Image 1 (cartoon, rainbow, N blue to C red):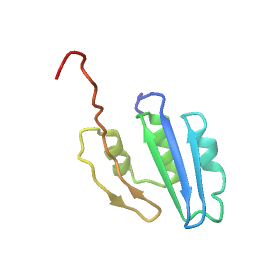
Image 2: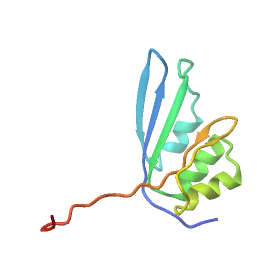
Image 3: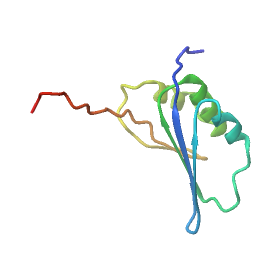
Image 4: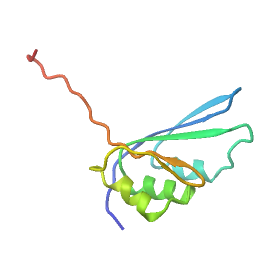
Length: 106
């Protein structure tokens, strides 16, 4: 098992045409949240993870029954951004670069 560990900022957005609910989670609160039943009104659940940690990847992989190759794509941060369609979800692994301002330049 990989030893990748970092604190993650996780946002779960449940929505339908008439409702919206946003949950802010972390590594510790994600697994119990995923075990709860999704409300009946939810038509789509968007899960955004800022950070890369094996415990979060494992929880999401079990929740959405992701294939091992999909999990490998998540772990490989050098992959291009892409979208893959699965029976239970659409997976979009993407590495995000951060722009930092350098004092005294420009």
